[in-house]
Length: 148
Image (tube, rainbow, N blue to C red):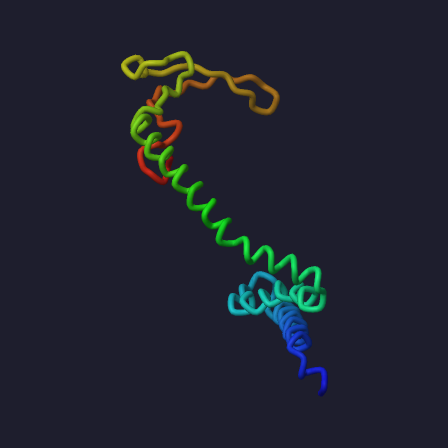
């Protein structure tokens, strides 16, 4: 029972226990059943590499440096997001409602995009002529902030 006094051993025990429980439930109920509550415990596996950090001084220094760099990284992230927001606003202003085309590649203007056209397509190694009606369709959407 001395092994259960160390927190890392308890973490390893929980990870193994959850894995065995997962195997037993998949065997009993099949692999198609979704055990959502078990996924939360499977996330404990991601904590196992932290054992190396706690026992290695070099890794502890690296992790400490990364944690101290987080405020500067967040500053860069904020500036980058502001930069993207500016370009999204510009994109909406210039391109809102303008990115349309005719389904017929030979027609470029909306008034001419009426009627039907013939196009060829290969079906099973044979070229077939298909008649389609022309439609004025949107190719990209810049009509809202999150679309741009």
